[in-house]
Length: 233
Image 1 (tube, rainbow, N blue to C red):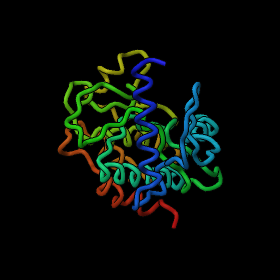
Image 2: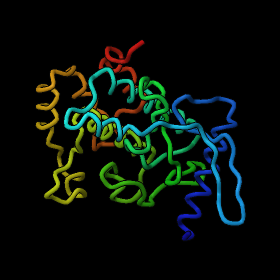
Image 3: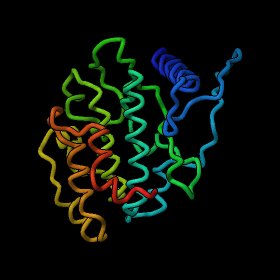
Image 4: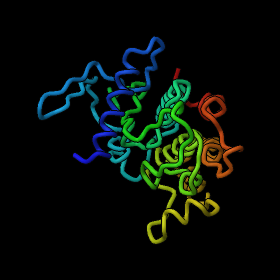
């Protein structure tokens, strides 16, 4: 194990242990039950997950989730991001693979996981390039950035939930596409062809605003009509 990998593992354990004992809990963040190590291995004991949201998307093939399913996942993800930021933790690697499904029959039981790329906001400003390129916010590729990078990643997740594909073309540099003006036509056409709630379009656009000052935060997104009208009570 490299020093970088060891540091990531130690951070993961620290955050999961912290979340597990925090006085204020979040149902949408994965925390550890306990952790221990031996001479050869490190063990993290956590609740059993059935699969990830990526697995659910793959089962749907090219269709993506319906409006109710997608809104349910996004509600939990936004609540998790809001909670982590309140605890001074920026996740920095939000993607479907890191959203675990505890019960496939109830997407309300999804939990955000994998804190190995996270940053304690009390440790100062962020400039390190970490995470997964396809979910990185534009400002992360440029240097200094804020916790709003998590909001952008959530927007990309929402896009993937609906379309079962990423917003980026495969024949062009992903970095270049992230920095350019987004072509929303394919997303809008997919929403229309699947006869989904059209209000998901401004919802995703709000989270994927390139201007950080205009980008929606979790509170704004959670109060949007798409969530309110599609999240099952």
